[in-house]
Length: 215
Image (cartoon, rainbow, N blue to C red; front, side, top):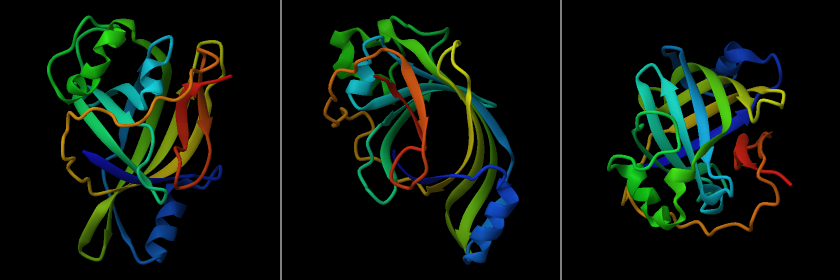
């Protein structure tokens, strides 16, 4: 599936109600939906094999169980975050795994089998998110969803948590041509440190936060 979204870092204390007034003042309509909460565990190997392959892999736990999800790191557009996304039911137990069931994520990771990625996975960052959700439309035309996210991210037991709020506008998804296709991003250079980092910044053409090596 192709994910299209725009993210904005919110000034401290702005809140969902003010966001709603701004968006509706611009001629859009927001219809409140149920609040959601989820916890993510971001996975990679000690040598950052997935990061260097241009992928992010996470376990997302929510009210409907736990999913194993992968995304491309780089956007195919400089106007919004446009990335490929794969998802399947999470395997039992904690990583690492000797194997996972057949599915979109398993097919995506198959070209990396020679690197023993599944067998070397570890949790490199954790994120908790409480989401205020709205259906996003113009008149009677549905456009997607808007959420106000209250995020707490942790990239190690010895590091203080990073907390922030952001708005995510996600447009209606586009089915991908090949859900199990091989990632096309070129590997980046070898990271100089194995310590993960979670960075936050505002803007529409970049992640509002990311898990990456430091150094």
